[in-house]
Amino acid sequence: MIRFQATYFDGQTSKAQAVVVGYDGQHLSLHSADGNIQLRYFLKECVITPASGHAPRIIKLPDNQQFESGDLNAVAALEVEAGGNRGMRAVHWLESHWKPVAGCLAGAMLCVWAFIVHAIPFLAEKAADAIPPEITRTVSHKTLSVLDKRFFEPSELSAEKKTDIQNLFQTIADALQVDFQYQLAFRRSPQIGPNAFALPAGIIVITDEIVELAANERELASILAHEIAHVEKRHGLRSMLQHAGVFFVVSVLAGDITSITSTAGTLPTILVESGYSRRFETEADEFAGRFLIGQGWGTQPLQDMLQRLAASHPDFPSLTWLSSHPDIQQRIENLRKLEHSHIP
Ligand SMILES: [Zn+2]
Image 1 (cartoon, rainbow, N blue to C red):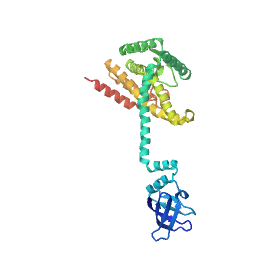
Image 2: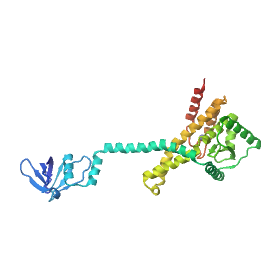
Image 3: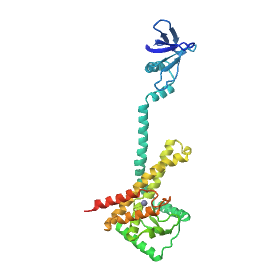
Image 4: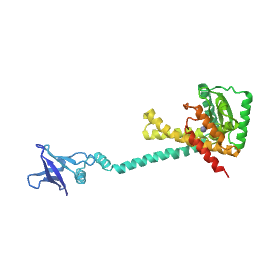
């Protein structure tokens, strides 16, 4: 037996009358205290309208009559008796339990976020180690030839200057006991200006402009050590694999790779990219900083170089040494801290 209070409307007038509703397992009966209302219908003759949040429930009776009740539990029980719409009951459950639902959703998003932030970089690092050197070499040379077509001209540095830089590079590589076979690629690029970057196979591109910007050998050495760090720690490959991983996760969540709009596909990548790059830049700065400290030069040469690069790139063109890490002051601060932690 289910009993609950309700408000009855006769379907002819707008008069609201208090009634007690009862259900005996087959019939729905309505009684008013004054005895004016005495109704009895089979439950299957009545329509329990879908619930909407915490609003009172409305039950339609034959001949336009209806009643409504704020006793949601009683009506829900009635609905179960009537074998009501399971789908709508589920919707109602979600509506009336929005807190746990929101909690689950937040939990799921947190899991995805944790996967993107922690698992993908971890997996990418493992995968980068497993990529055969031939593939890395092919990717690197193809990338360089694309860059050559778009951004670079042959270097105009003198043969003597190039030899000096080669020798400087060799000294650094020896001091760092590097794993890779390195190759310096000298290029001129009025388009991108002072710049240096590393391709995964160990090709380090330096522009004439960055060589000219460096005030001395130590500053140039700081740039070269930073680029060596990117190669030794496989930052290029890891970054590529991480992008692929994020793209994959977004595809899975979106359900269908072809349905992803360009925004949905690229936005998370961009959001995550800045975090990834910052991590790699910090790592490379630290590596270079330790090398400089080890040489007895302190981190000042890299700090000065960063300052000068920032000043020479007022609008951070897309392919620059600085594009992914505009927070120069933070990087300089990190270098200072690193140096202080090394003072005996
Ligand atoms: Zn870098």
